[in-house]
Amino acid sequence: MSIEASVFQGLSWNVAGDVRELVSYHFMVNALEAGTAVAVMAGAIGWFMVLRRQTFAGHTLAVIAFPGAAGASLAGLPLAAGYFGACVAGALALAGVSADRTGSHSRESAATGTVQAFALGLGFLFVGLYHGLLNGLDALLFGTFLGITDGQAHTLVGVAAAALLLLAFAGRPLLFASVDGDVARAAGVPVRALSLGFLLLLGLAVAATSQITGALLVFALLVAPAATAQRLTARPLPGLVLSVGIGLAVTWLGLALAYFSIYPAGFFITSLAFAAYVIAHAVRAVRKR
Image (cartoon, rainbow, N blue to C red):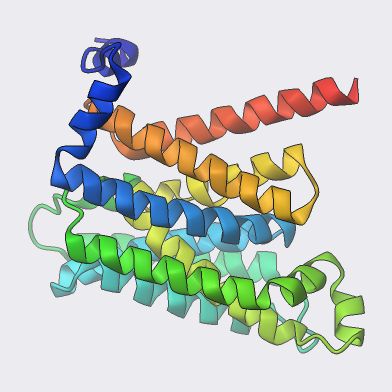
């Protein structure tokens, strides 16, 4: 059976009825609540990440999330503890090995690549040390919306709220430092401290997003909406709003399609985010002509 047939077999022309069916199950309410929090946080932080050209650092943190979750499974700890612990530690490690005394990121590519390779090997070691069948391995890598508890959803909402408050507090100097770090440093902006703080926020966003999309598909929410928004507008505020809006749209629609099919939510969220980017690229090309 094709993907289209599998998906639309559970859908009807009664959109309101399909929505009522989605929200009639508590696990879907939790998934939508968690997905909304993650999409808003990833859209806002991802916009700054793309602006700062730190997508490789975001990818490295996503890889670091994998051994964190695998190590938590091996130790019998909650997966969230592994995700957040590993990503925060990874952000501190990246800040320490990639930035020089001026706060620049001239060595970031080599440093992040080295950390990424080590983290990937560590993750497979933890999987190999796990004696038995690690049933959640696919979920660790590719995400799932099943089994999100009330506590997990509330934790993600709290983390997202705290991260957004911090981002709002540091948003103006962070934007200044991201656009022109040398001028910002000359003006007295603490560029190095902002760089460290942003990496920590990025780590939180990656850890939260990994619990929805999986460690390998974090870019679906962290990069694609932000890159799409920046394709459409260079203005900061409209770009941020558009990035968050695109993230919400692909998350809600991806979770709904996953509910009505046998395929994982990460596949639909990634595909929809990629489609949005392609459309934005086409729109920009038409505008230039």
